[in-house]
Length: 134
Length: 230
Image (cartoon, rainbow over all chains, first blue to last red; front, side):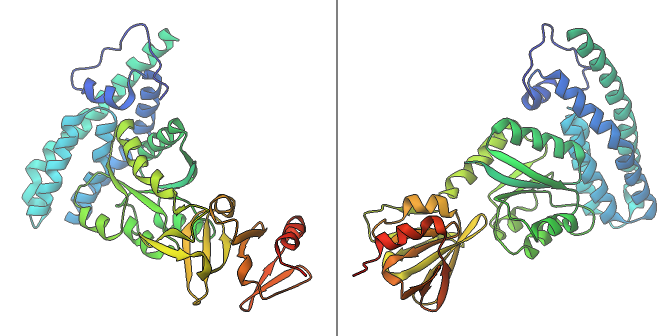
């Protein structure tokens, strides 16, 4: 986080909360690229754990798995997905079996899958942007 | 003053972000990071730190269980993605509560809550007492009630005339500057003694109410100068 200023601002996909990212990293796009790299490294195992816990029927573990991935979306600026995770956690507390939140789970699962693709695309764009800026 | 810390957190992106914040602040040295309570505990069994950045929900034991098991009382800043731990945080005397992800500014605010309390000794060398901060309160110790002060790594132990022991976060080096020069003298890198309480001295040892205090070669001449030898 060296607040490296670049000549041109990076243009984010509108799904990303640019103001939020600026509050975390300023215009340090090199550091942001590192963040995306780290996130992608762990992403699939975090997502797989959510699937696994839903299948196993353990609501507490499911809630915990969603809780664990939630801040990841904050770190990459996908604040709406972060909020969706928060809401899902709350729903977990209000039901007694995973079947009762099957619809919400499907929505969350799809969103997590789409988000992975979004982050990957943004990471590639950022790599290109940083290589041209250096 | 540089604070030593560890990070106990299993989310790698959060670990990296915290490390960056610490490095950027110039106020915190990261001694290690651990992704579970067991590993952190193993480190803390043989090391002390000023501060722990602590996640709550981790595989195995949770963060509060770590606090239950460590033998000293470092400052704690919770780093979590949940706001429901406020009550526990209060019970464990947690200094602050950072919701992940947090801004660098918010990180600095949390540090600001830690730094002032590092100044655990309030004294004027001309007065007859000092205040020490221990167990979350300020305790007045009259100079005459202190037998000696012993180093315990990043902490010091005040041993008093009534047999009590008070442990506080400080160093002998810092205290040497702060305690009354009329009463106290550093006799070893790990000891400051109350000169008025010395019973006798043999070779390189001082005896104070049954306690043996080593005197270092470097400090021995000072000790002789300050004792009223006739």
